[in-house]
Image (tube, rainbow, N blue to C red; front, side):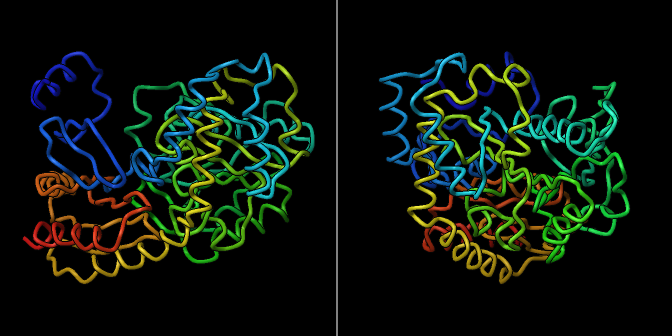
Length: 400
């Protein structure tokens, strides 16, 4: 087997450099643990950006994958398959919605929500065609497509990729008043994240989500919530909006829906919104494929039946408490909800990357976000003992 050094060399030779990964080459995973090609063991503190909430290779999910792969993997939506309907029913009942539209990636689900929000704006609200506007928040992250980066406030994501898609207004995150002031006659929707993950685990003021929902309802504007990263128990509730009982008009899901095994995303809504799509207006060859649907059905059942929302809340509170107790000259703040945790470093600490590299050498895999934040987001199956072991590695690294 090639060494880590050899694998990295060939990857950097033939793979486009759109990521800056840590120098570790993983070959196996189980639960919260992964191993590199030399056999070194690491605790996964990223969960593939919260796509692995159930842990690596959860036995029930792997069985669902194998069972379905031996039967039928793809039909396209030209034909029905026997896995899509049951998944849609399960998800709609779980979320209290009428309809679900499955896609593959989070960005595709966001694009789907944008399209249906615009159509609703034209057909229901009466906005002149071609003039619908969607309000978003500064420092958002909703994906990498040209339309999505068109309303990003991060220059790195936008630079050299224009011209950009019009029809968006960016306001301050965490300010319901800013959203209220920005709404006009041509506003079709407000789309936000309940917690901004890629921005550095930014948690808005308490009551923000429910206030935005209230404003949208009073101004006849759709409330679209991107729960691709915060959904499926990551923050201590099945969906993050449940902390404030602020059910959106459009619920955008992805990542952990596929159990870390197969990509699937979705938009859920009511018939009077999502039912506006007609055949031929939107689609995806792989969207709703039977393999993804079988995996997703079991993945979400694992989250619900193993009560990983309660586990996330309990372990997250414990983990944050342990992290806050660590003496460190570099830490400015520890913030989070459930097991979505950010350690904000002081500017003079020299960035989070060097700490992530040092933690990797101690067997802990974390990733920096927005330069000065270390993200801790382990699989939700993590135990108290495993958290204690992790804190034992973090303490010396942040203390020096």
